Image (tube, rainbow, N blue to C red; front, top):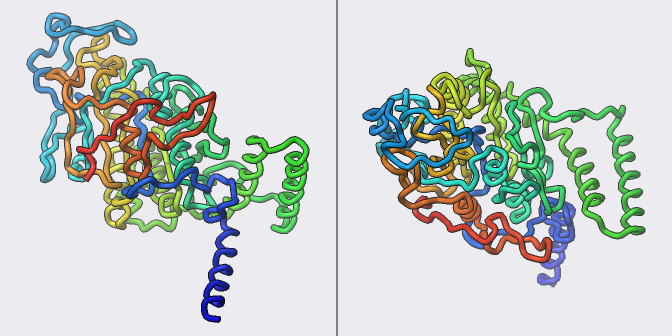
Length: 461
């Protein structure tokens, strides 16, 4: 009798859980994991801080004193100069900023990032990144999707396909658009050949976040009736024509939008954040791009608290170009750094204070770096041969420097890291074996890392 009762209670609990998409095995929604974790999970969520345009590694996290010694000299007489995007090569250009060592780790950071410098003991700085593409669109596709070709699934889509979403009322993959969509467009956040429900949802960092979030019906029952009618019509179409991803995804999107009507206003409302936190993030800054990025970082933290799996932040407009300084390097990089430095540091500190950084992976990266010689007189051209990214939290070994570029900061010469390796490491920290997270398409098993990728174990704690 006791056994039967216990089993009965279990069945009741199971039936209740099965009504929730995150648990229902028969549910084909985006909340269902394609395979689930393969090993120990270190990071449950990702915040990807995309630095649009390619920050200069030798002006941020990879100091090269030799550039000062040979400032103004012809680079072709000092080292082999590769063809560049615009081939308007000038002389060796020393960094306009000083570097100082910070924290117990003593990692050097330039004066561009006085606030992030205070968090340097949280970072694993990778100085030996390389890319296969020197042009923005192809390099952006490569960074976001693991392929330089348009139309592949973004890494946020892959993560949600593999692990599912822990949030029923918000999308599992969110892009908070500060004002700059990367070259390459929305395909940087697409689902490619994965089901359409895994693509990134674009939010603005102000107001309602997304359009048409408020219902126009006079009461909830009327809206629910409309959705039920739509579902009945879709079911008729499925019964007649068979399963189809576009119909299935449309049904899921309608249901998710219905749930988002309550969740989005709550997560977007920053007025209830303590005043001292708003100041820490930069919400009261005199510089508008700082205020915009501060809101993005704070919303990202709030979304992580709600279980959103993967969040990407794009850069705000700074009145000039993105991090793509082909001329006027000093002013352009200073404007971009001023926009993101305080909010990023506050995000790291806030996550740490809440005990969330241990299972939240924060990644800072551009699509490539910059040349150690000038483009024209005072800019830098694209450099895919060696640049810097960093990671923090989520199982990353803090206070670490991995890899190195040559004495000019031009090419990676030690522990060379490819984009596929970065993706493999991110997936590994989330409990996913990148070689086993596959989707059958075009006659073969496709994956984010294609047929490449090695986990960077030296940056994992």
